[in-house]
Length: 371
Image 1 (cartoon, rainbow, N blue to C red):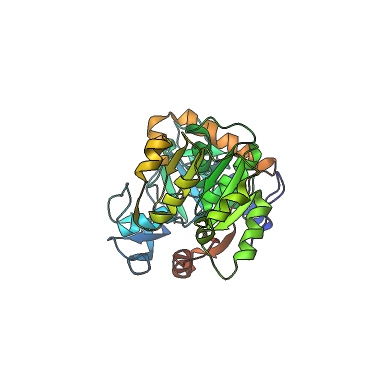
Image 2 (image 1 turned 90 degrees about the vertical axis):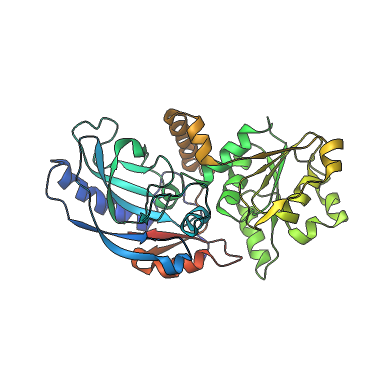
């Protein structure tokens, strides 16, 4: 079931109920950060790399003692992203020490703060400042610098999915080509979390999008969904290879930016449609095949091949820059120009179902674990 974009400044009903419950708990905890704490919390832990369905277990873990620079956080919701799956499998660019708690993204609420914490207070919503924090758990103690405060007046699902996909989409649209309103962008994996964010942010910036997806039984339903987000054209991988398809884009300028999350033949087709001097940015490799670039395209069209990894962007920029990016995206959310991808909320104890669903092909619904 598709989850529609919430109106600006209004929490989803389920999220509102949770927020009120957590806020009530925070008020009781705020009086003292040294009050009695539960000794154990529930977490999804993996002790070895492999098939997530086999190596991830729901366990009781000890809640770390709070120090002066720490914050105690009750997790509210955390999605399952492809990077989470890759990390558990052991084939991601950043791997935590084992055993590890899964999850690189999510939103939590501060329950208590240490004596030297200055940027956060009980009741604040927070998201991870970087990957590898381990968000698939009910509660945790984090260093103040490991999380970043966000506004709590946005929908819960938007907050839970704010820190990875929309950030990736925004930076790729802004950092590689100086695009102006009316310019066009072409992307594959357009139904992914990043793809849906690209469509919406591009529309907010006045950019036009050509969106490539794999053929599937519910193609028309998916096409309608993406167009409701602001997609101008939605085509299949097979149609993109047909010479006559180019004529359907004649009403818009050739794309100067291509966003590739697939690799293989799909990336080659994106390059064919790029304007001379254009750039293709690769941020994923779903096909597990190398990017194949025609020599003639590189020579005669002077195309540029680049890569993007949000974790590296964060290393190259200050926390203040990341905070600015987050606030920019929150403004788009409040204005109704950016909503969460289609989501399914799954209780933490049903994690096996959520993991299996997240790895199924042709699925556009993001699994979000609720605590």
